[in-house]
Amino acid sequence: MTAGSRRRWLLGSLGGAVGLAAAGTAVGLLRQQRSVARDAGDSVPFGSLRSTPITVVADDGLPLHVEIEEVEARPGRGQGTTPPVTVVFAHGYCLDLDSWHFQRAAYRGLVRAVYYDQRSHGRSGRSERENATIDQLGHDLRAVIEQTVPEGPVVLVGHSMGGMTVVALAEHHPELIGEKVIGVALISTTAGGLDPSRILLPLLPARLTNRATHRAVATLAVGHGAVDQVRRVGRYIANAATHRFAFGGDVPHSYVSFVDDMLAATPFEVVADFFPSFSGLDKFDHVEALDEVPVSIICGTADKLTSIGHSRKLHSRIPASRLLECEGAGHMVTLERHDQVNAELDQLITAATTRAAAR
Image (cartoon, rainbow, N blue to C red; front, side, top):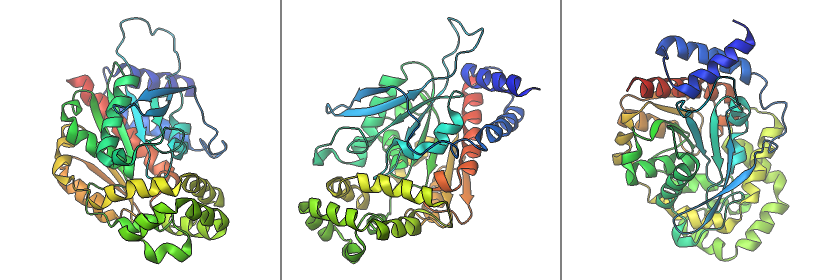
């Protein structure tokens, strides 16, 4: 089979969601994705992958910045065909949609994909403090799905806080699971039991990290402008902290700078607004609803922020899920081990599409 014919086969498989043989298709899709992804992203500057933005309005009126990657047009696809599967990506705390760089590079043109900035992050509007919650993020995700995927099935991919967003969606809108949502990936995340002080360490100036408590955050939030100034001045120290807490091993310096730029671009007031949501997070009783669909759980064994124990607990509470442990990788496994992550997403998309087609 030529490269062109394999590409046409992949597009047809994902777009039509018809007539897939589970085992053979999974292997073929994995092989195709690896050939596409080998250099995808490395040759493209971080933050340069863009598509025409649209605005999704959340239920409280907040504008959310959204970018959609459409599937490439192909001959023979006319009216009346099955809508393609859409993969919706929800990013983590103090990051933005650019954090999906390697996934976006790998799937561009092959899979219909939706990337959006969570409220108060990236280019989305600044939330009122009372709405800076994980529960509200779940409602936001529902709005994104409703307004960007009016037809066809959805696979959800959430990293860190984005994974918590997916769990909140399952809690508040369980009717979507198995009907609209046909697959889920939970990456470097949890549904509760998180020590929130751990997630602050890469975000605070080094001399303030020992004060990473709720009282300190509340105090720092009042003077958030001064904290932001200290963060800007101490970028060298911040880079070292980002490397230590975001990655498990040696990675190119460009990866560290890329993550640090996203962290630094998030005002500390936003950090403080969302911080209380993590300590009170307790949604493990709701993750079992996800067992209605194929679920992939991915985490690095050296994750210092949402440790591998959280992913193992998620796996135990979602019995049919797959667990991929990336040995030695840190919290930003989507960058550090993007080949492994993308290969697992291949398997997920294939399994979800195959299962949906068989129903």
